[in-house]
Amino acid sequence: MVRHMALALTVICPVGLGDVVTYEANESPVDDGWEITGEYCSPELSIGAGQFCQHVALCPGDDPPGGQFIAYSRSLADFDGAPTFFAEWRVRSDAPRTELFPWGGGAAVGLSGFGGVYYNAYIVSDRVWLRRHALLPFVFVDLQPSRPHTFRIELEGADRYTWLIDGAIVATGTPVGPYPSATPMFVWQGYAAWQSSTVCWDYIRYGDLKPRLAGDVNCDGQLDHFDIDPFVLALVDAPAYSAAYPDCPLSNRDIDADGALTNFDIDPFVTLLLAQP
Ligand SMILES: [Ca+2]
Ligand SMILES: [Ca+2]
Image 1 (cartoon, rainbow, N blue to C red):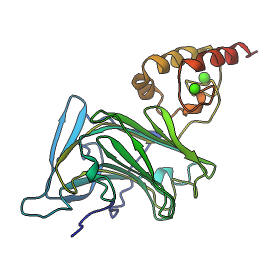
Image 2 (cartoon, helix red, strand yellow; image 1 turned 120 degrees about the horizontal axis):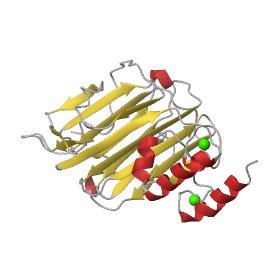
Image 3 (tube, rainbow, N blue to C red; image 1 turned 120 degrees about the vertical axis):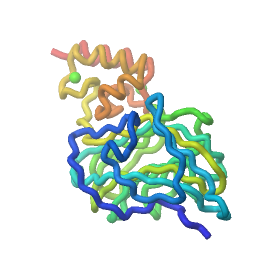
Image 4 (cartoon, rainbow, N blue to C red; image 1 turned 135 degrees about the vertical axis):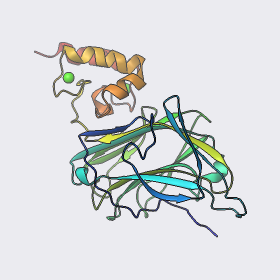
């Protein structure tokens, strides 16, 4: 019997949210205000070294598929109708690829709602399955195995969605509709469909996405010399930049618009700066 093939959404829990919400995995998600949306057979949980880990396995006596999981959720009601939105998380899974499709095992993140627009990512050791509407083709992206990877979605109303992995665009286009919408909710979990695996979360961040402005790398709404240090930081230490400016869109530092920040953005960034009055 298939007990669990997708994220179950049953708990609606409004919480007070600011412009950016961060969970840095230094404490239990519950202590940080996340609700347990669903749980089966008590997975082993641990916190250490800035990570929250879920070890999931088959429940003793059960036949696969359908093992342990524990899912956490938070209402996105405070962002319902927001013109822009982002979510970013860093996670490592050692789940084999057999867990992935169509089971949704390994790590899973869902930006969900009841309006048909959603963004789901299912992550195993060496692959991710991205899904955003029941009628649209899936996107699969191969990953370097058993390493943490940074996943990010940038949403600009009905105009554009952009999936990024490790700072590079992997899929972008026109969304079916705006999101967050229709009782939006953020859900994430570790899940074992066929065999055991461990999922370790470094952080989860989400909130309003700042406006696009090429060269405005500190996202204060202006392009000036205060953007130089953040630009250098983004180039040399992407995790530190992401922690400091989580709500700044890639487009502001990807000056040549090739889908990632690289050394090839330096010259056009300087040109932009010098062109300022
Ligand atoms: Ca700026
Ligand atoms: Ca670039």
